[in-house]
Image (cartoon, rainbow, N blue to C red):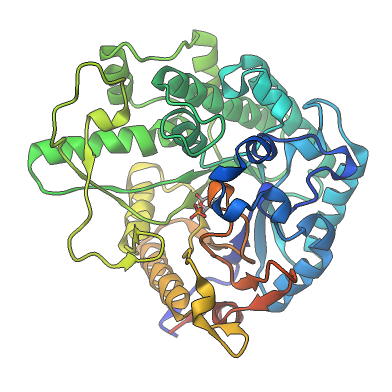
Amino acid sequence: MKYRFKDNFWFGCAESAAQIEGFSAENSKAPSTWDHAFATQRHRFFHQHGPDDSRGFWQNYQADIKLMQKVGINSYRTSVSWARLMPDGYTINEASAAVYRDMLVHLKEAGIEPVITLMHFDMPLIMQQKGGWLSEEVVDAFAGYARQCFALFGDLVNNWITFNEPIVPIEGGYLYDFHYPFQRNFANAAQAAFNTQLAHSKVVNYFHDRNCAGRIGIVLNLTPSYPRSTHPADVHAATIADLFFNKSFLEPALNGRYPQALVDLLRQYGELPDVTPQNLDIIARSRVDMLGVNYYQPRRVQAKQTAISPSSPFMPDWFFDSYEMPGRTMNTSRGWEIHPQGIYDILTDLRLNYGNIPVFISENGMGVENEERWMENGEVNDQYRIDFMRQHLACIHQAVSEGSNCFGYHCWTFIDNWSWLNAYKNRYGLFRLDLSTQRRLPKASAKWYGELIKNNGFN
Ligand code: BG6
């Protein structure tokens, strides 16, 4: 077999609580930021589908886990909903805790290793009303919630993730208006980013200080920044994009400190957040045991082409322009470039420059609009997704054969799921979700992935 992986390699799938659970008010679940966003700004959601239109995993997990077992995945990442487990942010809801425990027991019994994310974009609304990531009270409340999760589920979970893609709620919520709380304010973005890192570090330090069983990490969406040319201005632009969107979380998570070049740049423009030496110390001694990498597409960067108006507010894009790679292969329906080599470049960078930290690909997949176009005899024939996954897995295999410490691959997603403002616009699943009947229909990729897992590789 051309691409054979080692025996204990994870072949799994990833999802998140708000995107699959539904039943938004059951067991006294409190409204989360995304429940609130939908309740107040419904028109912004694709075809007005909200979190309650998800596939109802909260009540269907037993059947869905059976499907996972049938495909043969050996690991599965999902998140706990803080608003469901602790509706007021502090007090455990025993009924919800019991459901999460049962879900984890079912995964274990099915031979599927649970990987649990503590924060995948959605926080209790009451915490957002206290200031969200701008508030240190919320940072401490999050650390308390994490401690409770370790106590409640630590005997069933060996792999913990603090945050999924922490940069995304910062970009979306405080710079580009696609995540709650839909602001455009760099000072808040910088403070929320710092406090998110602090929350992560407090949880990691607790986990290590208490010798909690298992390992803890963070999931980052790393987007390699490729300069348009070797011209120093293009290279500089790509370096700055990399600092803002990759290294701002990668370096503190792995090295315990921020990149000096980012600190210098923010200082130069008077945009440094408020930090204390004590908080920097907390970050300095927190190192993750493993890293999850979400990879979808690279960032193509060139030097800024137009002058910035002196009155425009500070933004990362003051320093670079993005461009579309001529002749690129593209996921036409998503508008994203398909560049499997990016995953190889990330893994190689981690091997060479970050101590070859244990890493797994925590999300990779292809979102397709109007996927019913490819329906044949009741099944979506998603050869494009098979090609996408195969190409990325071949690059992972190459990186591993050169010494990368990559130990797994999680495809996004198992069943089509609800995706924030995009709702069901881009279907990613190995199974199609029929929204009117809630039936789960295997796509061709589900069978292909199952075969790959059985053979531990592919040709
Ligand atoms: C990832 C997120 O970045 O992208 C997921 O972790 C999200 O939560 C996924 O659903 C796909 O996003 P979209 O916008 O293509 O549906």
